[in-house]
Amino acid sequence: MFGNNHLPEVLHLRLGVNIDHVATLRNARGGARPDPVQAARAAIEAGADGITAHLREDRRHIRDEDIARLKAEIPKPLNLEMAATQEMLAIALKTRPHAACLVPERREERTTEGGLDAAAQYNTLEPVVSELKKAGVMVALFIAAEPAQITTAARMGAPAIEIHTGSWCEAVAAADQRRAAAEWQRIAEGARLARRLGLEVHAGHGLDYQTAEHIAKLPEIVELNIGHFLVGEAVFVGLAQSIRTMRAAMERGRGNAVS
Image (cartoon, rainbow, N blue to C red; front, side, top):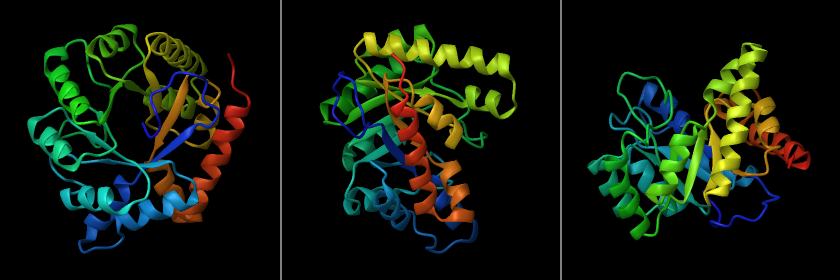
């Protein structure tokens, strides 16, 4: 999401750092600290290629003023995660982030629990994709690595997809080897299909050092977006160190990329 929409092999795997949960911590007590914009600057200094922030309908973490400040103040691209609603479309068109990732959203969920059903929501999503593209915003759809979803994204004209990696990461964490292998095969095959269709391929949700290193082996994937894990690790080692460790894991994986 933070680079150009080329399809040649990308040696450098981009890292987008999601700073939502710095805002969650701020909002738990009120006031201005910790400041998500300060966290974004620290992330960039530590090696992030861009910053991701999800402006939710209920503003549970990131707020409108955070998005405005991020766009104005950070020296790297901003990727706005957003639901495909008219309210969010208006904010995106006003803010003009470098990129926008369309995600599903339900008020009762703790975090985004799955990918968009792009195939079923084509008529809702396509006009939003079109408007954002006209405004010069790079658009991705956050979807499961399923052929029907990937082919719909391509038909819709979305330049990129972000593969939802949550189910695979959960299986790895539970040491459920059979499920993990099946989910991994789905991700790998989905990434290859998306690349053949001309889509730029990103991935995210639930990634930690281990899973990020492993998924970095897929040459079709050019960007990872990671947030909650990095903010959690920052409690123990600091945000800059958690990002440097993540970058090193990604680079090890990319060095072992498989064709």
